[in-house]
Amino acid sequence: EDQVTQSPEALRLQEGESSSLNCSYTVSGLRGLFWYRQDPGKGPEFLFTLYSAGEEKEKERLKATLTKKESFLHITAPKPEDSATYLCAVQAGRYSTLTFGKGTMLLVSP
Amino acid sequence: GAVVSQHPSWVICKSGTSVKIECRSLDFQATTMFWYRQFPKQSLMLMATSNEGSKATYEQGVEKDKFLINHASLTLSTLTVTSAHPEDSSFYICSALRLTDTQYFGPGTRLTVL
Image (cartoon, rainbow over all chains, first blue to last red; front, side, top):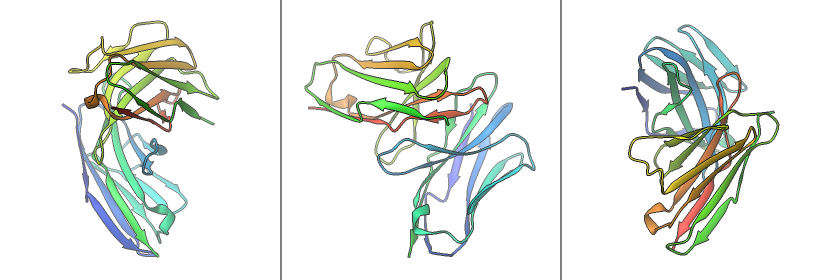
């Protein structure tokens, strides 16, 4: 059974204080690892897809990396508008379904 | 690109009534759509996979007679919650699959059953 574990559950940062979120996974036949951002009361917003170990992707203050066992979402000099829940999900086997972690709730204070 | 809409965004209904939620991919065609539900402070739980022109595939523990899914076109899937009860109150979110195998999510529908 595919498993995705995200840590920490919650993270509070000061504006400009860089940090990383972790997503560790156990799957058979990883096809892709996805990062989404979810604001309260809204659907998840797609951020990145990573397909193989060593791959990195960046978007503004966010950078996602992937190893064979985990992925990190690095947030550089965060701003209050980066406050949200960040979800990690894996896609494995021959199906396109996603298995989600429980998310990391990020709060960035001004 | 990759915009997915849901309607309605929120609905309140009486126990025993049925509620239909629409999910549309606005700028791409999606042969596969997914339906999730999300309880407060919890992650998304997949309910079913909807394929255009065929029967939906339901996850274990999801009642197919209670949650009716129809995927009538390449841009529209509907979820009907039949004979809704208070325990069906939740946040329902759909997603549509693009060719890159990425799921793009709708904004969600908040269902409250009184």
